[in-house]
Length: 202
Image (cartoon, rainbow, N blue to C red; front, side):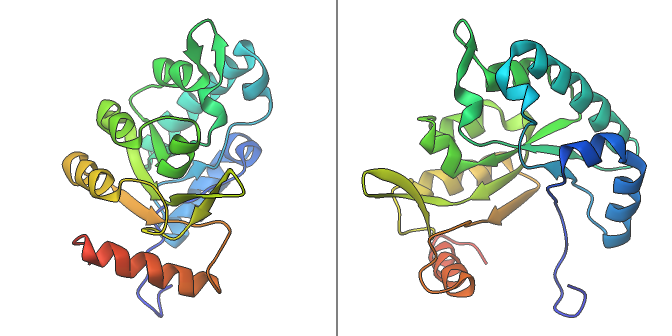
């Protein structure tokens, strides 16, 4: 990363390591200059019961405060399961946002919001104070199911998504694509990059 001038700005770290080895996580992230440690998903116990979810949020808030004391920001990356209703009309995400303290931030993935039937633009604007970063990932339909694809080759409204991010100014925006590459990851990255350049990104 030093050789090519890249900054390491955010991470996804296993939840058990974040909780049980917090001091090591802080040390390792400081070594690489990464000041936004996070987790890629909630542990299983937080997905299966409200009590488990509340336990997770207590742990996450405590962790967020420890990281904030070191100048770091904790981020939680969403998928689609957070929008399952678990308590009357409330979804897992509703409870996360109700319980989150000021130091708990979201790493908002617009693809997974769309998969869950959530409008990414409305979500980002409504919860702008909780947004630490944003994952840009497009969505297309393959065999009647949602699939990841290069930005600009799917169905998301990128003019609107980019406009709301210009408005709310997340700390970082990441171009991400897990699967379904055109040829290889770098070819897919180039396609996404060229499309975003047309929208004014450098």
